Image 1 (cartoon, rainbow, N blue to C red):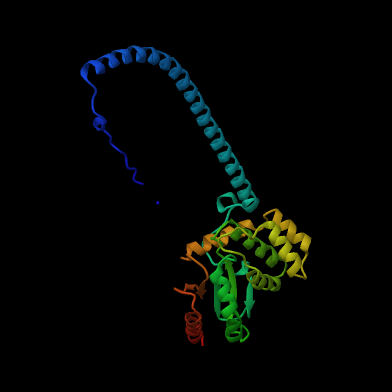
Image 2: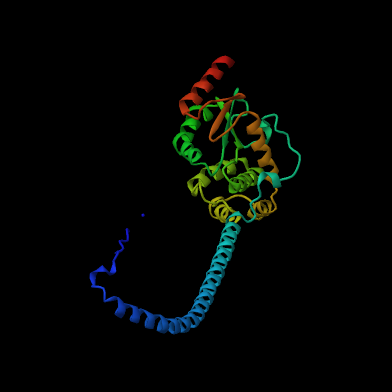
Length: 282
């Protein structure tokens, strides 16, 4: 990740004694050996029993040690999961009625002129590294080119799919938006700035409570904390997720322009789709 060599010796090195002498010695040796063998046999049984007993004790000890190690590992893993997944429901645990069909613009956080002819939807997951990169690379450009100019109204729909804390982060965003549409967009930008490792559980209730307390001013923090702890906006997050799936969303970020889902998240493709819709509405 040894090859043991053995030696094969014959007794031919010594000259054989004469037959009579050899016979007498052999006979006497047999008698003596007989007595000696009897003595050794009795002692051998005792030795075998002692060895067997020691071996049994050793095996039992190994089994007990192994069981202890397994038990400790299970406890450790359980505690680790508990610290990460505690208070993080999955979609099957979120109960209530919802409708996947329909984009429900009126329910979503929005940015831009409500009278804009072109409606753009961003589907995103706060744990998604690509979403963070898109936000940092293109959001200001989108705002400058199309939002501030009144050409589009931008909407945000959760597509929380990476892990359970994606759902928790999305519900925090919903709780912020319920208080202030403007504060939601601040929350979105700053949460991406504080995004953790995609492969780890980081958007826990404790993290989100502390994050909002330190970074988002101008909201009722006690109300936010209550909504987060009581899962007030978990069902809207589930509805968003089901809506995205209904319209063919299968990853993040993805964009929809006037109801048409774009095949990629490139800014060039998004801008071209917007311009095409603007040309049709003129």
